[in-house]
Image (cartoon, rainbow, N blue to C red; front, side, top):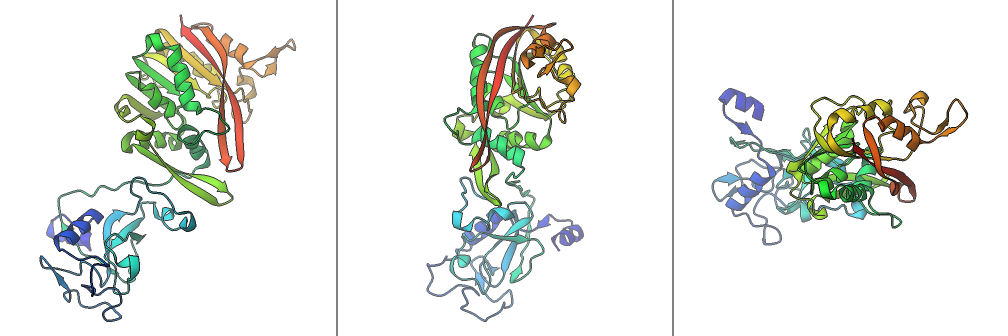
Length: 394
């Protein structure tokens, strides 16, 4: 109807937002339960057991049915306010509707009682829901800002969100933060300039490095991972779920402000990219961090060969790897190590890495162990030890 009305009148007609409904409620000086002795509208089962004509209950300002009679659809999708937490006894009620497909309804209907009859009641339904519901429309040039507050549920993405922004487990330091500290310690006398993080995952290392570097670019192979640090950059917070057991999940929200990283958003950038085919525009870096990527790409030697052309003279290169070679992910003939050569001698990943970097880089420190923990669910954790090395461009 609103779209038809806007098209035929050539006026900006739409549904009101939740905030606009609150403003209408305030201007109309509508009393809120339990401040009334009698409901001021067709509400709380105090009138006919049905809806009534829309001009039956008038409020200050000449508006009708601010509360009661029928629920009122709004333009606003349901989501939690900042600091929202799920009640453990009602964990399947709210967050399943945080999908931008369920819009808030306000005001209550003739059958609404208890907390449904208060102005602060926030319920949401799909847009085709009409039971005890109606709508009013507004004419306004003001755009309605739609928040995309969907809780991430992809297991791998949630795992790295938790590893980056969640709890520390078994006294193992937060790995992305520890990697940033390890990097800053290694470049303290040369901090500043441009930095690149290949394999940025949920973004914690990128944000931490931005405290000392002028610009930090985070690249990762998958858009689903990149989307979460972009949320942090654009909105200041990220939301994700964690499996507790079976189909039971918990809901989490983390903000840059809580980690002392508010203010670095303008110094970071996140892009999806193939690490084996880095675009030429990504160049001129004073620091490159390759984080747990050697075993995730199809051609680690090709990935490493590009770094000489992407870095400035004297640039620092820091590489972490867990030497977890899997043929389904990296073809056997592309492994840097973890095999026997033609003479039957063992070739380690560090030896293969050194050979691949030798034309342009020399090792200045390491290897150093950096442990990290990945959570699968409340009673299953994966303890890993990354091997970190520091290199400098000749």
